[in-house]
Image 1 (spheres, rainbow, N blue to C red):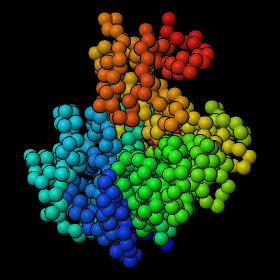
Image 2: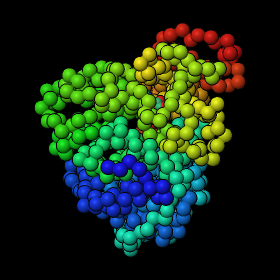
Image 3: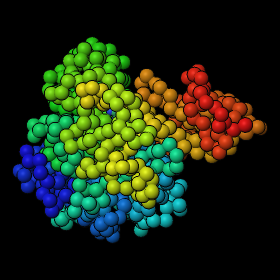
Image 4: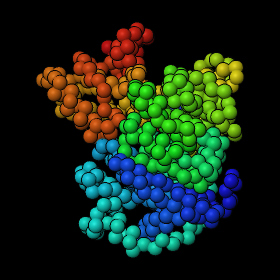
Length: 541
Ligand code: AMP
């Protein structure tokens, strides 16, 4: 398998489809689609090429141009893949949205990016219609499941696709051409659009080959949703640019279905997340041990710290090693990881990928000693590095200092060069591998009539790594109740996203703030954990 990409053609859509057909893999299964009810549909690389060509052509028909921002707001379904590849083929920017986003979550992303076209389904349309008047740039919505056009700007995917040719010649695409846009949450302000370019395929393909160790006979299953970076970097680009067969499953987490997929589909490499693995740990070991996993060579994990207990459980119950990998939306591809052939130290995220130069830096920018905790940074310039935060280049610039990108994580390096994750240096909450902004949760809570002040924090959770906890102070005329708690929960799920829903809500008299009015989340956290709040001298009187 060649690991070079033709210099003149960096187009990810082309690399994942046409190039595979030209390499003689046209009739090879690219995607085995399993519906939630486990019905199976096989799509070859030729199918993928033709379906994504149809999308490229239909986009041209509706007036889309290179550089336009086109979003998908879809559940897991085969069309998601055709659409994302088709968008990339015309050199427009593809923004996949997680299907559980609420109205505010959608508005923030579609509004900030000035998205022009959105692919969605009829049942999701209500959410979009409620915010449509605040999205002046959004000129066309394409409905995946409508038999006919519903209005001039509400078009039927089926009608458009039926008319569209299966032939499309992808223009030579430069490495620097923008490709994917994934929004990520920070601890302040609205989510920011992390913009990638087609060059990222170099690192995604290299890491799929060298870290995930995918080869032409593998059957790969990456459980991540396409709304998150893992779902595009390793649910699309890495494996398909190598011509590897992928399993994609339309259902959610379910131990029985998951184990049946691993067994019946003879999955050889599986990429999943610690929360899912911890959920599997709760299952009866006898059931798991009855599953034939003899085809499964490697399990990889990403998104949150992988606890040593999970590694020990997998060795004991599944007879498999789990390799932790670390990366972020901004890095586009795995940067630090464990891998087959390198000794795993349970609890460590492993060693750097070839060509990646991490550094642990102190606050003054000097290099930390071995075992000394500091800011986890990366020497800027790896091929899959993001190129900006869309419309927020100032925030992008602030992430770099003296040639290093500051990841926002803290870590240390041991004497053998292994990296150990310690936490975030900001207040961002990582729940089941999803980053949740406390600011977004607090802002949504403030929209509720009864709520005067709110403060959101992440606290340790055995299953989810962290869970969202919300502190609320009510306006004087209201009193706390279970009904109100439920109302707040539902409202946040509906406005922001189901993953942002607080698992616990505490009603308190006032939210601690410093003299400039900033919420002191550190104090809320200490209060929750029953710890000393430390220095409170800057607290509001
Ligand atoms: P995202 O940008 O949403 O993919 O989230 C990236 C963040 O998730 C990282 O900055 C880490 O805080 C966390 N993360 C990802 N992978 C790992 C890992 N293997 N171990 C610990 N934290 C991780």
